[in-house]
Structures are given as C-alpha cells and as structure tokens.
Length: 83
Image (tube, rainbow, N blue to C red; front, side):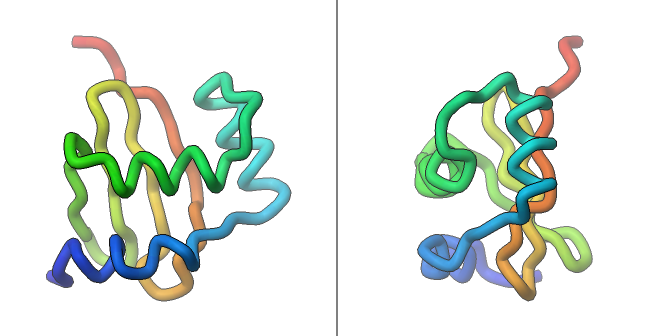
C-alpha cells in the first residue's frame, strides 16, 4: 500500500478526460472545474484516502473519487449511498 502522501504530493498532476469531466459533473451535479474540485477534496484534511489495487480512493462524507495511482487520472466520482 502506497503512502497517502504520494497522492497529496502529486496533486498538481491530477487530470481527467473529456468523458471523465462529463461523467463526474453528472454524478456529482457539478458545474465548476472538475479537476480543481477533486484537488480540493484530495487536500481536504477530512478526506479519507486509501489505495486499493491500481486506484486511489478519496472518500468524503458525501462522495468517493477514484483516481488511477499510476497516471493520476481522475476516473470517476460518485455520491455515497445514504444508509
């Protein structure tokens, strides 16, 4: 398991594709810049960050972001299901 600081140190390298932007905006209901939004979540001290396999997961109180650990591509994000 990689150190969480590895993702935080590489936050400036986060990026996504056009399809990723569309998917994340739809899933989270965002109109703002998706990459900047995700960077804020990675840097938020309340976020829980962990790596499982080839992906990083950034978990907030309401959503989960999925980021490729090798390329730092933001793959998707979705709202957590309410329990």
